[in-house]
Every structure is written in structure tokens, then in C-alpha cells.
Image 1 (tube, rainbow, N blue to C red):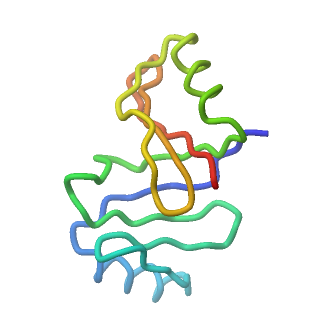
Image 2: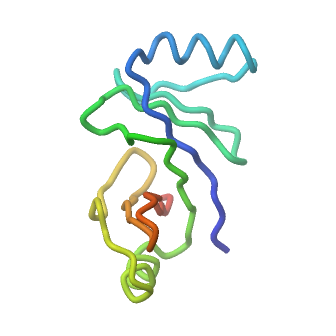
Image 3: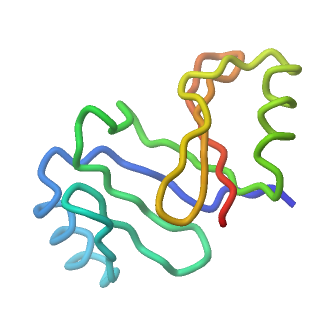
Length: 111
């Protein structure tokens, strides 16, 4: 079953973003290297991307799937365009695509 499990935000000042979300909501964030932090609740989590060369320009919904290759085929067959090919990250693989309205989403599969 596919579901949105993650929303990634750009974070020009990662430390300030971590402090803000921790203070306001009491969220515990886990660091993955010097430029990425995220919650790890297992429901809908928040990722903060501090590397502006990798950061989305707007909030990026991430959909969890069981078969990333089948999802890529389905996106292309339905007319979506791939904006970032499949790549590995700690914990899985993902790709980004644009829907027919030009909105960017990502699809991920965990290891």
C-alpha cells in the first residue's frame, strides 16, 4: 500500500530549523550527516534538508511504496516526468517526479 510517509522541507539554517521544530512541537530529530535531520516516528515524518543544492524549493511530499521500480514505471506510464532519477540514501532509495500540474513529489522504498 502506498502512502505519504514523509514531508521534506528546505532548511537554509538547519540548526535554527531543528531548534524551532523541537521547541514548538517537542519533536525529536535525528541527524543523518551534517546537512540532514528528520523525525523518525514511523507515521508521517518531517525531513529538514540543509544542503541547498539538494533541498526542494517547496515542501516535498514523499510516498512510501513496496516496489520503487514498479512505481517509476507507473509514474512514467501515467505521464509524469522524472525530475531526479532513483538514488540511494541511508535507509533506502527514492526518486522525484513532476505530476501533470508540475508539482514535485518523491517516491521511496525502504531497505
